[in-house]
Image (cartoon, rainbow, N blue to C red):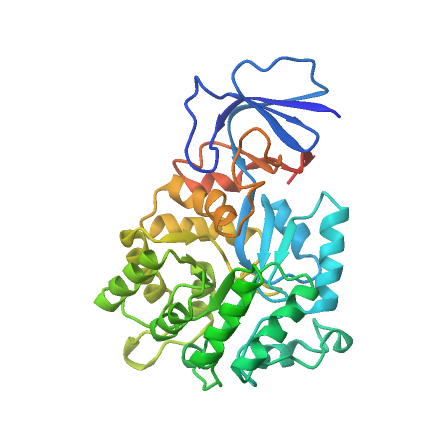
Length: 386
């Protein structure tokens, strides 16, 4: 096994920036980090001088939707792991095989087929994509859940397809300016209980504060978005954020998705905000941060916009603009999602963990814009040039 030495670097280990006296060198061997310190001993098969740069764990995007080309694009921007939140069985098998066989694409975890009410979100989008981005042969009759008694069978079907966690949808269409069937409380509770019994985490798609409360009532582990229907200073946001912290749930930010949505919609008469506007989402994010709730950086990247990889850089900029320190934002895209999704082999730089690494010029621990200047990306110890 070859040994690689990366030296003369500032190290952000996923949680904090290590003191210069404690870590200026990182050694990789066999796809793992084997040493972090300032006195690594050779011989080395390869050396990389990162003078003036910062070494970070590979980035984790905690909310994506993977299509052909997505994983390669993600890795070019330093995203070494994508957490997919909905993918049909046949395309998912293809993407998994690609990620397992190639080091020049991001690694992948996925919810597979999500749980929704008959005719519920995102079936209206799935219909639009069939025949264009989705081969009709890849789109089976969709399994919707109508009764609590169907929950165990639905979860077992997802496990058989290799889903890493369960995603359920609680969305009545309000933020899309439409009316959609929404999952009932008993079904949400039954699905969550069945998933937990099967050892799967549960993530809920919920866009409004009321939907988020319903998801929390069901006992989900996390929310796939911040809520975006309350005005930024609405005290209901503070109370919801405090409930999330108290229950130990996490929230995936997806501010860049709300930014994209806001830019695409015409303004309402009188300048009133749409229920899914970015300003409302930022207000929710600020409430979560003030409450000390777990925030995971995610983008809702898809084949259109936001874009895979680049959108996570923008997400971190939006997070710092919303009040997170740069180190907090970087942790939200490394150690924090790894911890909440049970990815104990990545998300930090420490001996024995995967050598998923990003080297960038400058210091993103002070200004996350520095991530735009990537020098190198390692996935499983294999280096690629962005």
